Picture 1 (tube, rainbow, N blue to C red):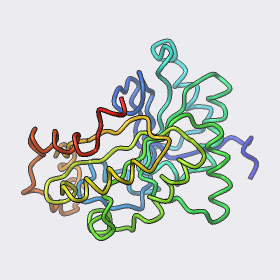
Picture 2 (picture 1 turned 45 degrees about the horizontal axis):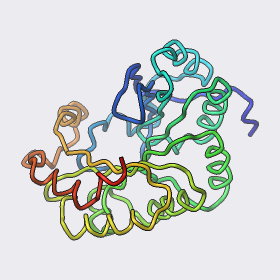
Picture 3 (picture 1 turned 120 degrees about the horizontal axis):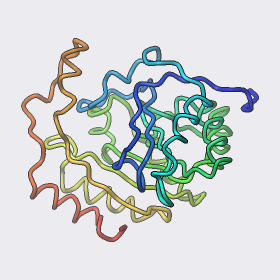
Length: 250
């Protein structure tokens, strides 16, 4: 496929002044489509590849550049989801054009589509040429618990983390802390050890579980199985930050 052709993608929503998904003020694009089924997902309405508004890379970039003055030196564009890596052709086109305009580019991903098989791998490597930062959400380090939480294996996700280290692509590691699901001291220790083997990690973030998206499950008619689980308390959040050595990466 000629990436110079204008690419289209289905967009779930846009946040013009995001401050939590990358450095500085961000223009955040949430794409449709995800193959993971995380039990705590706060955007289950992004799972379908067929919902949302179809937009071209040119339209999205034109809209984003309206806010460029607010980005200063540190801000830029973040593409999130859903799962952005399901849309490699679009991302290559979109980010290439963004870099031509001097824009800082970030991908917020859970890594599930990653494979070293073709054609994905070559396209992924091309995309990395136009990507400044990866926000990699590692849901769980334990493979069995990861399978239970997300419905998929984490082997290729951890392989992606290792590969990004090999090519020295800057990464922020994120871990959603969910009581009874992803808040076990032994797993936090293992995750910390894994992160310690990587040479490209700029920041580690603990994202406390919240219930703000639970109503979407009800709206979509999907049973929400975590109704009895409360967000983690301050002590468990502090514990996770300590075990993951978050202070060392700031």
